[in-house]
Structure formats: C-alpha cells, structure tokens
Image: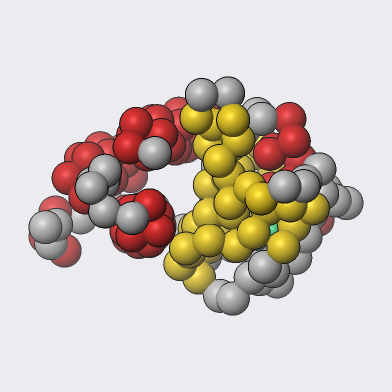
Length: 159
Ligand code: SME
C-alpha cells in the first residue's frame, strides 16, 4: 500500500511509483472491473494536474463509460467520434494540447484543457481506451504517453 509520504514533487518519480503500485494491485484473479477501478484511482493519485482519468470500453461500434475518477462523464461515444473515439478507431494514442482547437472534442468537464487517450488492444482486438484530462494546456507529452503505454501494457497482460 502506498502512503502520502511516498509522494514526491518530482513527477518523474511519481510515474515510477505509479507503475510500481499498478504492478502490485493488478490481479488477474479478480474481475476486470475491479482492476480498472483500482487503475483509475492509482493514475489519479500519482498524476499531478489532471481532472479526469478513466476508461471507455469497446462494445460494437461504441465506447461505453467504464471505471473512472473525476466528474460524471458521457456514457457513450461512437467509434470515430471525440478524442476517445478517434484514438479507438485508429488504434493509436492521441494527445490534444488544446481541446478548444480540436473541433471533434466531446466536452465532459468544462475545466478540461488538454487530453491524452491510449488505446487498449489485446490480441489485435480493441478492448477500450484509457483517457486522461487536464485543466492545463499541453499537460501531456511524450513522457506521459510512454508511461501510460507502459501502464496499459501491464493491464493488457492480465486481460
Ligand atoms: N473528451 C472526450 C470525452 C470523454 S471525457 O473527456 C471524460 C472525447 O472527446 O472523446
């Protein structure tokens, strides 16, 4: 179990702690919904300057809201729509530095200014996406993409 004393002002070491904790909490013997709930909480805890972290899960031609931390969000996103739907359709990570400049962005929390979405793919099949929002412009870069891809790889291992 992590404690507040492990938190550092150094975001890089927070990212290491995030991955360490994730490895500790992910458990292939419990329902996936339990793992997604803990993973969203761990990301929310170790990531500075975000206002939403959670999952949308693929079902037919839509993404459906999964476990998350943050304000209530839209429950259905058509594949190919919004930042999440585009990342899901293309099966590629998507970073939006300023959501106001991205016409397809779907507003859930009006405080959100930037966003990153990482597709979750197991055996060439889209499982869903991991989505993080920040109230700051350009909060997410290559460092965040890499760390979140590592986090998603840990999740994919237990799917
Ligand atoms: N902004 C997302 C919708 C989900 S919320 O950010 C939680 C999008 O454009 O797909």
